Image: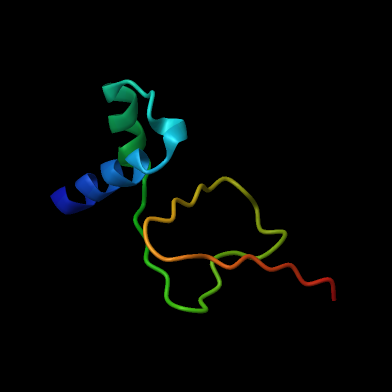
Length: 69
């Protein structure tokens, strides 16, 4: 649990947009983060899925594709 809290805080620090948050704001936001790992070639979401999530990539890369079929 403690490691997840630390990892969430570290993830926020990777995004310049969040650098100016007050400590209490960053703490509140980091409590809402859910850490997930995805495997190679795993689909994270599809076009048309409802929004509402923000993904912070801490390691690796993501390929975004859009099929016109």
